[in-house]
Image (cartoon, rainbow, N blue to C red; front, side):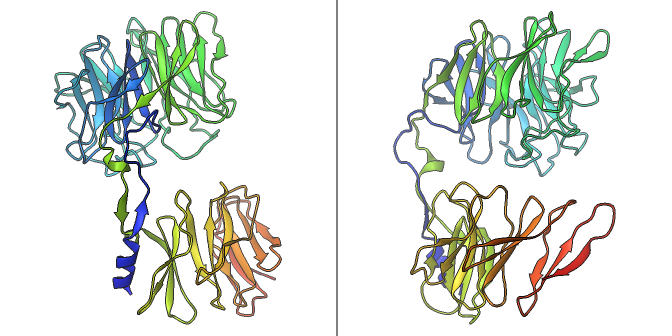
Amino acid sequence: MKKYFLSMMAGFILTGMISAQENVRLLRFPAIHGNQVVFTYAGDLYTVPLKGGTARRLTSDEKGYEMFARFSPDGKFIAFTAQYDGNTEVYLMPSSGGTPQRLTYTATLKRDDISDRMGPNNIVMTWENNDNIIFRSRKQSFNSFKGQLFKISRKGGMTDELPLPSGGWCSFSPDRKKMAFNQVFREFRTWKYYKGGMADEVWIYDFDTKTTTQITNNINQDIFPMWHGDKIYFLSDRDRTMNLFVYDLKTKQTTKLTQYTEYDIKFPSLGDHSIVYENGGYLYNYELSTGKITQIPVSIENDLLTARSSFVDASKFITSWAISPDGKRVAFGARGDVFTVPANSGITRNLTKSSGVHDRNVEWSPDGKYISFISDRTGEDEIYIRVQDGSQPAIQLTSNSDTYKYNPVWSPDSKKLLWSDKMGRLNYLNVATKKVTLVTNSKDWEIREYEWSPDSRWIAYTLPHNNTVSVIIFTM
């Protein structure tokens, strides 16, 4: 079976673009100095004029990721975080381009990648002056929320820890005697609209008096402080979507400056006269003196190696599987599609062929007629079934989903499907009528273990409880 699976699955194609891209998206981690903007695209650093245009690539390492570029105050250098030598470290290069110089040497945490929910290690935050670079590191602690701030000379050498117990995004006052900063670092976590004890605030540390003052105080996220003159700009999701706010140090008043409702502002950076940031994958510039917001149009003209069409062996990305009742075929969920593969001989079928859609959690009905799966093709998780030979279109069984669904399980009579979800609910549906019935709703945690009785009349599940043992429950 493996021979057929590998040969047929290798034909799964990633759709790409072969021409230069105009006004590209997925532009990340911008920084600005004067009229020069540097950002990350496809793992490399690019530079483009503030007015936009064709970007010029500054780095070209194929093994790692270059990110969080920050200009020196005089604009001559760029400090950034990169993975040239395996570890995620701080590097330096001329702002016009040149050979990167490695500045830090730390042990890898094996959780340093940009895709990890802990976020990368050794992230460049800002410059103290033209000589010293400030970066956030977990080299003294694995705790992802409580890294420390360090500084290192652009000439290299030993690092010095700032006199703070923890720190994240930060910005110096114009006289460099104070610093606005965050204590918690959770920008890479997947919890949107978080309002718990780890929601961050903006603080000011006085290096002379060794005192700390809190300038924001609410249950939402207040992050990315940027100090300009007598004002501190920052992001907050206090109105649900992450927008730009400003705190006036003289009046002690906070004002909302942007009104985004669809996408959060991400990873802003302060320049001489403006703030650049991401929104919806594009770059924008906020002019401090006027409040004018303009998009920075960017085109990329290179080989776009990571975007070209390519053959991918989907057998390396299997996430779910189910054997047909007669044992002659196997269903696989792989790379967002649903496949069935012969046990001995025959063809491999791609039942969904849904580029840009995530189809997952395949299960074969006990009568052998259908394959069920979860798909987000409507924008939300819904349950579908399809005739196992692919001869008929998929049938959507659920609608109006409001959360993430977990693996549906067929009843032995093939008439019902049982599943749980992120909201702690356990449900089943009648395949013929599409009627959904709520079995129970866990108050403490998600229900992840559930099964049908052999006669399809009873359901057994594990109900989790806080501060005590879970219990097994049977219900009709």
